[in-house]
Amino acid sequence: MKLPLLRAFFLLALAAGLSNALPAQQPAPPPSDSTQPAQPQSTQPVKDANGTYTIRRNARLVILDLVVTDAKGNIVTDLKRDEFHVTEANEPQTLLNFDAPATHALDSQLTINSTEELDRLAPNAPVNILLLDEFNTRFEDMAFARYSLKKFLERQPGKLDTPTMLLAVDLQHFSVLHDYTQNKDEIISALDHHFSAYPWQAQQGQWRADRFALAFLTLRRVAEAVVGHPGHKNMIWVGRGFPALRWEDVPVDTVNRVDNAVQDCVNVLRDARVTLYTIDPAGLQINPQTYGRTAGRDDPFGGEYQFNRLAKATGGRTLYGRNDVDAEIGTAIRDGASFYSLTYRPQNTSLDPSKFRKINITLDRPGLIVYTRQGYYLQRGPGRVDPVNPSRRLMTDLISADTSTMVYDGVPVTLEPSPTDPNRFIVHVDARGLYWSPATDTEPRHSDVVLAITTFDRKGKVLKTSAKVIHASAPTTVAPTGRIERGMDLAYTLDPDPKAVRVRFVVRVSFSGRIGTVDANLGQQAATAPSPAPSTP
Image (cartoon, rainbow, N blue to C red; front, top):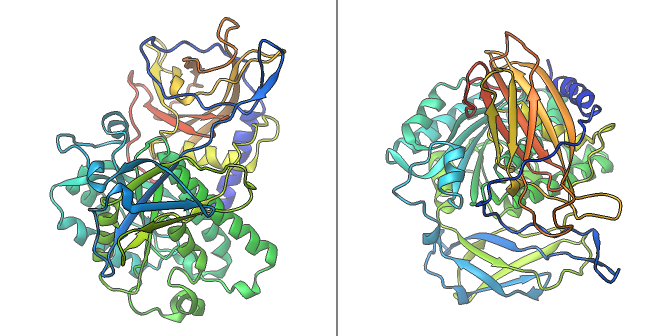
């Protein structure tokens, strides 16, 4: 089954579930000793004691992760705070925080072997995400890329300095080959046991649209999965990127849609603090008969300028034109362990939100090169969830989360199985991930979430998917505005199915658009993290 048809099948199933919204459920209060970050301020009007309405809004903080090299490409790590000068939209900015590269190192006493351990033990640690692009890359080039990755890993110590995740994507599957780990041998083993399908679609022009869409979808789903971890993520994309295409033959509206998708990906990667590195495994020579004549003329990454734009806009680099792919992988990982972090609050927030806010960094020391993201667009929050006619973006995000084995940590979620009923669960949504609207004259404070539930058989095949919109009202006794520490308990009973061996619960908070997931093996009385077992569509 082609991927677009498979997605359409799930869209119909989820739409049916969303159209039957659950009644409002009372959330359970979190433990009294919980400490959470400040609640984002609402842009809704709030009436004070004198009957005057005001709008409160906080300006966002900008966090820049940047790498500095000399003219020969050597990393420079001894710069001081006062040597950096930042402008945004041509206006100088005042640095609120400065972190040198040495401050980001993971505590050597810790050992991380899962997303759960990473978020619990080292929430600010940097990580590496290795992704094998198997849908735009010819089989022989991908075989060389895998050989090069293994060659690089074999030179590393048994315990990696940085937690590393390994992913592989083809046109039918998004595979988590291994969750975050510092065990080099486990990553090599996962790589050895992964058998990629022959990417025949890369030679068929009619599959170009699918391959473009999957590249954007892959970047977005990875960013949404890891956004809950505040540390820096170094994403290393090994493969060709986009397929070759003659842009002079493409309608203008199609080009505009691709440009919009590029900008959306840049924003999503920015919000997740992801820096993208792209590595082309095709080497020095590009055969026009292999990747198309535009591949060698315009850009080694599939013949398109946009994939290079994605990497450059996020502060990463494009590495190509060499046969030592293992060294290129090493360069990307080296950069991910040698970055400075600068934080500032934009001085001018009154500019047109549709205008690009360009960031420029200069250094007092001459001859140095700075790699960081180029800027950003101001973004509005996620749109309201329409339970009758869900948006295409909402459906895509939910499908990506509920059919994956990747852990989404954007919303802290835990699971409590019933001690008496193997099909009944309580999903705990932590207060840290929720937003409670201010009370109005007609409505108490409330929080809206989408809950999606999917069951799988032993081969990882989806058996059943349902989704519900939940509008939870807080008691009238709570303060009408301000931060309240209230979590949410969502009870759900699965339909009995002897074929079902795993269930995934997906929670999406409507205000923030963030997603959290939790998995359980059916028939067991303890929630488990998803294993990197079968590839999932």
